[in-house]
Image 1: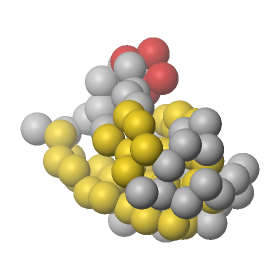
Image 2: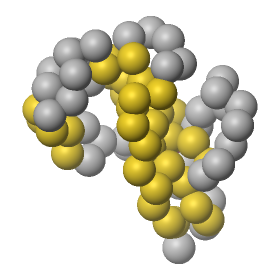
Image 3: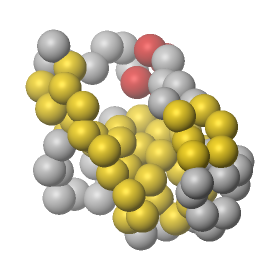
Image 4: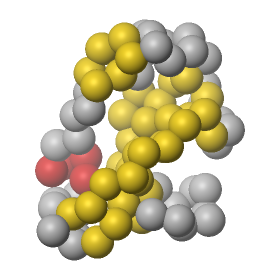
Length: 77
């Protein structure tokens, strides 16, 4: 997952089921290290195994809060 041109207040990226309104119901997360450019990945340990087939999304969140800064959807087949 590339990370480009994000605010230095963006601190973490979480995986959610697409459209899940429960902000605390993330599947896994990684910290960005407050970088504005770089990359990150979720390994099977962080995810607790493989993701189930379906629609999911990555959410970029501010600091150690649940303020949503951006999101991007993806599909697991």
